[in-house]
Length: 255
Image 1 (tube, rainbow, N blue to C red):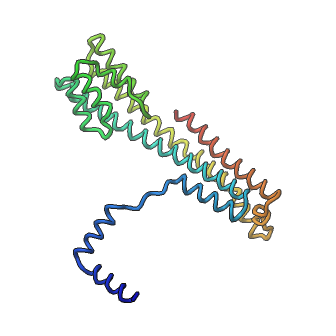
Image 2: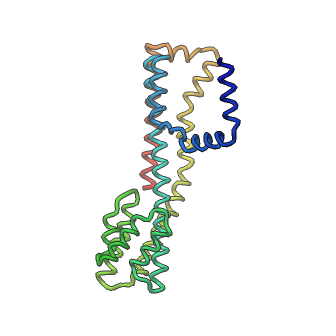
Image 3: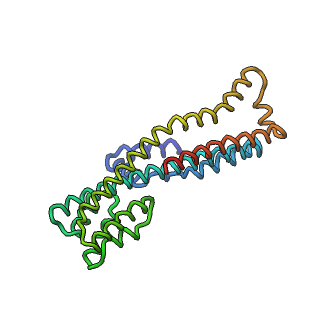
């Protein structure tokens, strides 16, 4: 009976129509993506059950530290992308204003050009309704709210005093480009410090590995509970604190 069912299933799958329909169904329903936090929790629980509470605590500290550093790097990349989009939008607005376009039309063109058009679309809508586009920039929230707020302040000054808006926005764009160049140079100069911190954080693992090769059996001590488990938790906490402290120091330099 089982063989017959398998043969029938193979025959159905061999039909082109059913095979294409199955492929479309699988493609339309991709596998859900497991969050990194869930994987960390699963690893901590597994290590705690199999190797004991000290190992679970150490794994939890290391996993949380890696997750925090990964999130900070992602936030930094997203902020850099938003700054790039802001500069692109300002380029479009300045170009439109220089050829005599209305500020609302210039903001609409910028909203079509940049990848994050929310701010420029809101400014265009306010200008079309008779309001001030500067309010849309001043009320913006997000990773680049400070930079967008500068655009709103300059826009308000131009409206209040009748100054050339394109010239003032070009000054803001030049300032943003200078700040981005300075931030990139600072990040490049701090690469050596970050590499040194990573090497120092990995040195305890190298020492434990060398001790294991020499026959001192440090893994037996660290994974055996008692004093060794306490040393494992303290060592993992100190390594994680060192990495986070290094990130905090470098963040103050680049901010």
